[in-house]
Length: 199
Image (cartoon, rainbow, N blue to C red; front, side, top):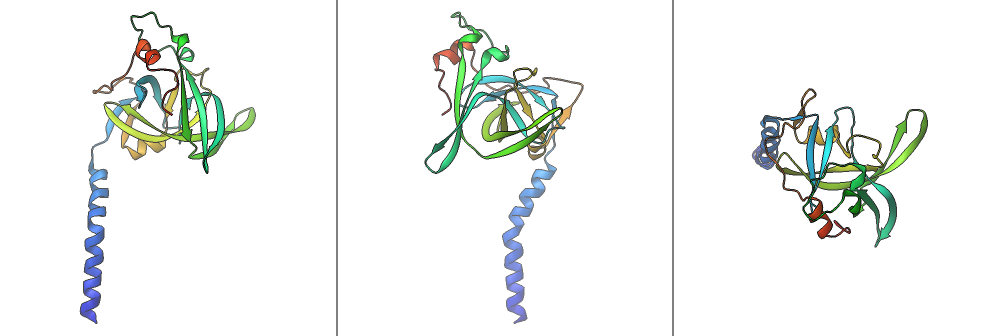
């Protein structure tokens, strides 16, 4: 009986060892230092946006307007638009495309909703979707709450959930520290690829 128990315990240790090794490897991976503002590129669109890396926010946020929930089969989805005119950071093309001419439309399954408390205003419920994006030459996926950020300087915000999961340190006195770039499209390319993107 003791021999059988010993074998079972040994098998258990053997099965969890790779998991423990992987976790230990992630912890030993050196953190990447980035500035408090960096470029990100939304996957499948080539849309490049400035993002603020904010350790004071838990969930990341993305500028979106005309946010509309709908049903797709048995799932809850949401459609939304990202008008480039709200944040004029896009590279100009050579075909005279104006930033006002490009409005990107997205559809994503709703991951969850969050209630945001606002100082001096009623709390607000926001939809949260998962989005893939590139930063510092690497592709990541995280949750973004959708909100009208037109009055803010940066159309995207990356919060603690992303920063801690991906082992990123933020240098608050510097910006655009990323050593590697992400491929992105200019205004002409965004317009030519169509405005109904990333569905």
